[in-house]
Length: 471
Image (cartoon, rainbow, N blue to C red):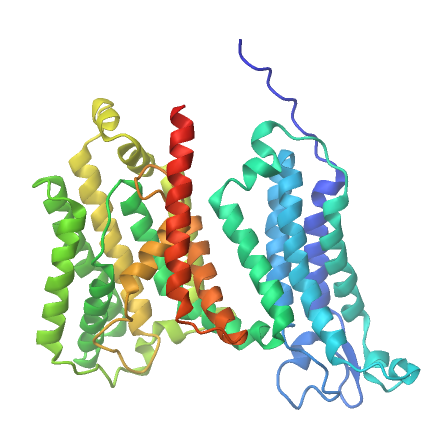
């Protein structure tokens, strides 16, 4: 007998609280006066943070730039809550942690501001000069934390907190937000705009490469040559633009070269039936050898100013962050809704069943490795345009970082499961951990140990989950 379907959870005012609080915070941050200054008068956060001279009262502002990012997270969670009201309880937990990222600025503010006498609140003092935006964002942030205690309807089984947090992406997001809050309390400099921006844009190319790796691993394969290929394609792009090729063409050619190399790997795996780990291990050595012989260890310099794509900031947002977010959204939607994307999951879950259902294993393998080459090409352009020079050797163990991001993000090393958003979140988590270690005076060399432990824990959890499904 089939179980009766649970009645849908109606939308109540509590489901809209995230959207309302987020819009209040964003509006107060950008539009309302934050502080009244002696010469400038009522000043918004934008005015306060435009330069050191603009902060006449020497107001504590470290970490204030995190507030709109936290509000954006609350807004997205609020929209999710309205679309899927049955998941309200689980979403409220994530929203509460996002609210902590607003509150963390105020905790550090009050810690840094002296309260030695009642006059600290008088006219002309820092506390007496705080304006409406300061208090509105504080109240909204506290409410975002406390909304977790609002009674909500008991959801059906799949939307319970235990089920949702059995999802790897939710666990990573929760851990990422909690990490930022805890380290931000321990060392407020961790929340500086420059540090957050450096973490996001400096490692966006790894997240993009991990998107291609995610598709490959979902099919039950792997590519350990991606690090060397990024280095080769970066040098090709840099040398072409130095030789006089227009920058847009120098950006596009690595994508075609990457697609060609990916297609060659796919041909060996699909038609000659050579295991992907063997093929890509060979390609790793071949590419490294070509790179050393061709460049003789010489760095690429003197690129024109319009070549540096990763240094552009349209609308004030670093280009690598825009590329990372857009490509993550595209891959998530494509893997979920396109026939080819769903076929990747079928191939990785059960290759024989996929074959019997009419799917062409050879075509799918050629497609996935070609796509992986394109994503590696995009990552190489992002990498090569970050700085004024291009090193002929990519960062050490870059392959491990990319594979770790995919696996820790919830992609089963055995194939068949995983999402692109998980790999992107895992990339951010690993690099936030690296930065956090510096700010809390822990050697960053411990990151390799953390990466290894995360891989082992993730793989073991996946194996346990698969065994339970068989029972």
